[in-house]
Image: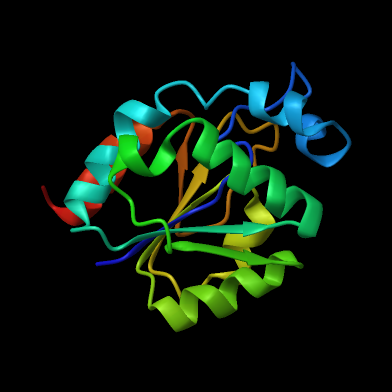
Length: 163
């Protein structure tokens, strides 16, 4: 069993009520670093790392400047130390459909993402797909498990792992 987790609006809290990644996309490094982790993330991800025996990767779509801010954010919040996840388990791509390439290469069996379109690209490739966060769109593809928050995500992953 191998898990992939998106970063923006999954590990890192969205900006404001609109849920945008604006502090990373258009803001300064200082603004990005000040962005808090998603509520419950640091309580849940270490348990996921344990459940998957360390076979957990971050897979995120973003350009070079957001990649750099993201790496700084992960270090600033001591993500690796607090979660037990290996530092070299981070992958970036420039287009959302390319996440499927990483999933194929890493042989991921589970994936948590906040975007239905990403999870659609993983259909038939990743057996357990989880749609994270509050969703305005009521239409969720068959085979995708909604997870509005981290405690729910952990419970549903545990269920699928039969633990």
